Length: 116
Image: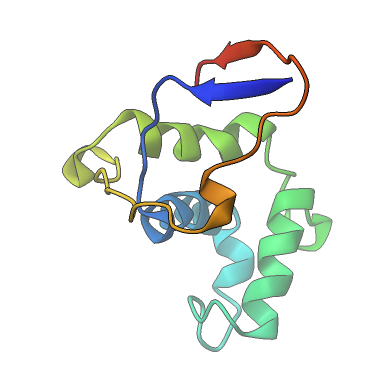
């Protein structure tokens, strides 16, 4: 079988990531506040707090984040184009180059439309 893309919205990945990170940082503020550099995303303290916020941490009285609290900001970043409204701007990807851009069709597969 094969598929074809009917439509797509491309967003800046670092913008989308920041929205999710901000939600985690707000939810786990009690833990992140104990880090020497609370928003140093590569520090052990930050990474421990991030994990403990997602899973919950009784020591900081942080309940585990609900799925919607994690994917909600991600979805909003795609739904909204204006950063002032909590969204992420559209980006245009570079054209595809190389053999992977022209996949071979094998057999008599039918096209299935997938709406993204």
